[in-house]
Image 1 (tube, rainbow, N blue to C red):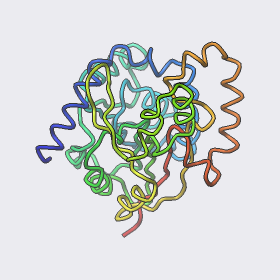
Image 2 (tube, rainbow, N blue to C red; image 1 turned 60 degrees about the vertical axis):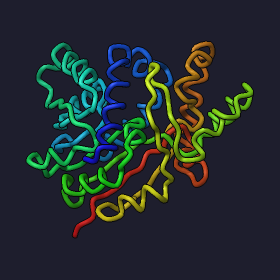
Image 3 (cartoon, one colour; image 1 turned 120 degrees about the vertical axis):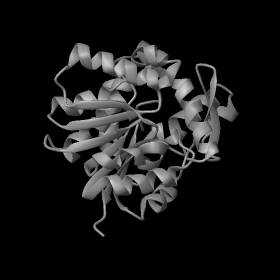
Image 4 (spheres, rainbow, N blue to C red; image 1 turned 45 degrees about the vertical axis):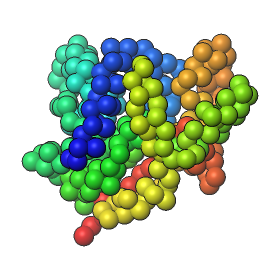
Length: 273
């Protein structure tokens, strides 16, 4: 890795180390977090079978890996944060000691180091992990070498434009936050630690992965369901969440709508060369 990429990966690691022990409380187990994750799981169950070997990038505390393992899928789950991996390992010992999961401290920029474990039947990255990667071209190239021809790649990233976010912050007279994604890059604060964040467009992602992958489809995650920082509002109106989730199921895959959610979920297929 280049010095700049190494520095960025270290910043991400430090930031998420600082919230690892609280991550499940502040996102995984929230109403919004659970609802958005269920939307991703709907596609995971369609794409990956119980006999597959799957590579997960940015696994956090392992929630998605445990979901797949419960269905019989074997998962190699990686994250740049040693503290996140430590939490995931404790969860495995407590919740699923026999699960076919290997947790490893590996940042997305360094997944080429897993070449000895290839080929994988598929790979995925959930909830914005790849938004924190400066060199996504390098990640795409590495994934092309790790995923077998015909294998699937699912990536869920924060979108370039989120209608909920824009309207919410405009209503609170915070124009800077309302349009912070539009430029394609910003700096987020994770527990007080600055983390550079990129918001690649759909065209950019399609082009970056086109050398090895074909984009089959994409859809919004969190179209009517709001971003996680609106959790306090949703907690006061809990009956709304199932209604909003139903709207997402109806509209999230439609043109225009699929581009303006909190996240976007892309389904790629490894091309046969």
